[in-house]
Length: 290
Image 1 (cartoon, rainbow, N blue to C red):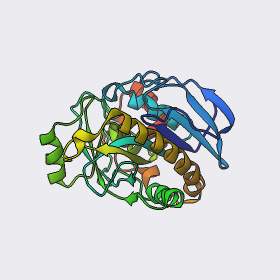
Image 2 (tube, rainbow, N blue to C red):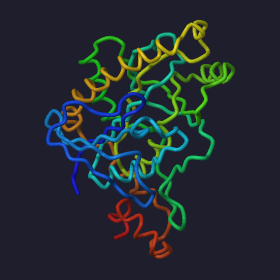
Image 3 (spheres, rainbow, N blue to C red):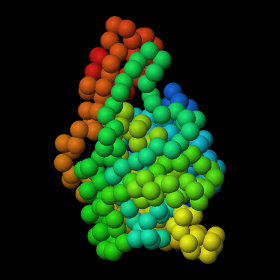
Image 4 (cartoon, helix red, strand yellow):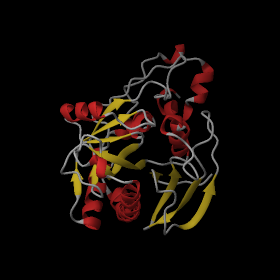
């Protein structure tokens, strides 16, 4: 099986990464089914990286249908230690303009329970800490890379609301999220971030603003052509930022704690765990229960 250190999950509009060398394609199978698509593994800026298009070839998978557990599990088995998740988002703040880039540091979960959110259950209980949902070391590396590529229009921190979709917000919901102090809205960072934490993989979102959400007075003036234009510009920015970020990520101190997230999180006594669950969860829990 091929290996990679950094995983890149591409969002809307980003279905491939340019510049990869020594490329191999991996078709993964997991206990949770197949991932969103084939994983392309190659070397970029001296770093072995694995790219997975979140919505599959041709953007055929809705946010509610994403096989998030399969995606994270497949990257874990490849040896991935850090994941950059690229997401198209709407802005809830005037200063976060279209084509700006935000590396959020907090999440609000507004999904509706139809997405599996954990690898655990069925006889093995674990409660990982999630007060800080994003890896601070990984975030810093991506912030620095984004500022080096774009200069202006890069924002360090912010709260991302993750809604179920596939419909967009009502105006009342959009105004409510602003009152809560949220900054961005999207549909895909959860349960990805929770599953990455359970898999002990560092995770951050590279949020690419395409438009203002419907709270904005000028929202009605937004056209499909405008959003598509912003999306395409954001894709070019995302590719450049990822390429610049990879060496920084490898060089960053890994003392963030993400790699030991399960150390004190597994509650179930080893003797009480069903043997078949120990076997199925071995890639995650083997170093703690072996």
